[in-house]
Image (tube, rainbow, N blue to C red):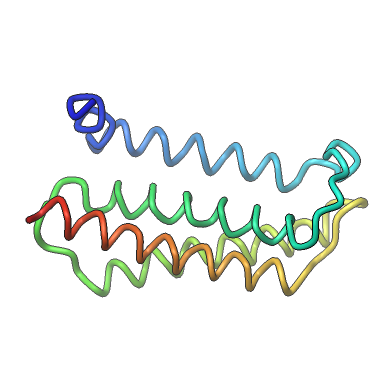
Length: 132
């Protein structure tokens, strides 16, 4: 298992995972809402946004710092977080402008931001545990 995790954390593989994941969620967010099954659970949509942006943030932070085990620049962390968060805002705007069955939702943006922050926290926790 450790060998698999080590292999998956190589920069080239993380870059591929990041690009593929970003493309997949872009397609999912811009697909017609009629293709999404209807589930009547309160706030499930927001939870999905949190989880998607959590994974997005963790993957891109993992790729960004995969070559340097001990030095994490706060400036670069901020840039990665900003890009992930801006991506969420951009997707909301694209949904509003280019889809008929989806609309801009400010609470989705808040959920995206929460997902990015949780992603940062979980990334830091994992990094601190692996460095020790």
